[in-house]
Image (cartoon, rainbow, N blue to C red):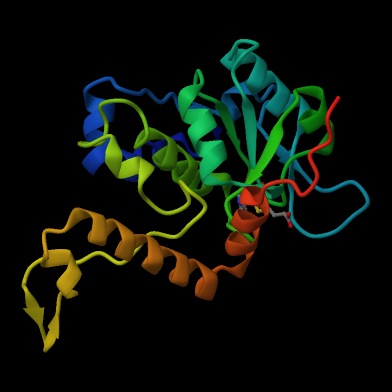
Length: 234
Ligand code: SAH
């Protein structure tokens, strides 16, 4: 993790599920200060954008030195949190969680000098189509999503395979006690004890919800699952 604000970490990642897993060594986090790689008297890390315009840009030389000092090894993904990046998906989260753990660069100001992105092979990752003031909160979102998938972090392994996005669907609605809330009972099937019916009901609910709320996911799921029309031999 490379940031100008290492004191932001572990922050919210230090409590609850992720925090307990951090304390017990199931994952680790090293937040390094990009400013430690500054070379001038004022320890400056940013400068005004070439070509003019508002704000400041993180310098290529300082950030490259910070990346090199972090010495992340050739196999570790190098990510740059960026609104221009590929939108983060659950399948990328699963991939990252199974790997050696990424080096994550958190941008600030107007972003980072383009040359360091190319020179250090940074893969830009976005957490959504909106602009944050820095990459730290985006990085926390990514790390949180990965950590909860690590073996031993969540109670039951099943809870991560049945949830939203794992099969291209949003999750079905959940209920718990009390049996009746402000006149609304829990759907009868869920207390019937008939597991096959419960499963069928949940799938139908998940499909209806996905179709209504996320036509993009629904279309992608149907596209992916349709068998090819012509199977050519040879
Ligand atoms: N001027 C840039 C935005 C810079 S925001 C632009 O228009 O693209 C400052 C930093 O916040 C970025 O360098 C990035 O690290 C982080 N950031 C902002 N929005 C983000 C998002 N949606 N996903 C991931 N990182 C984001």
